Length: 143
Image (cartoon, rainbow, N blue to C red; front, side, top):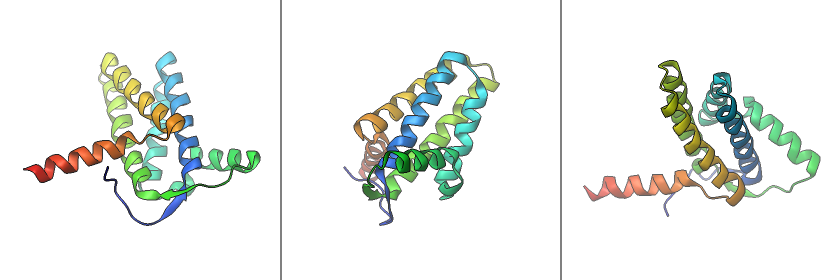
């Protein structure tokens, strides 16, 4: 598997905890249809994708939980997590766009995929974005 790399390390436990919060918020959206949840996630994903994670509310909460529970850091390269945040931007923007145009089935379907990706990352540390990145890179170089 070939993931993007930038040789800057971040705490994987924090990234997984953020993914867990995304999972919970997406589940609440799926249950309630409250569109502001997706707007909040869009902003949070944008901040993290733009390397402004220090302003991310989910990042701030994750830091507090990690400090409170005394969870040791686990260094991992930042680039795959940043790529995942960019994918999150696309998904949440598409969900909001679908909601605005009253394509509720599409919005909920996309939210279900976002939920699944967040589940895989938070529970199993499985980065679906890395696999998508590798597959896309393979397809691009094949042609």
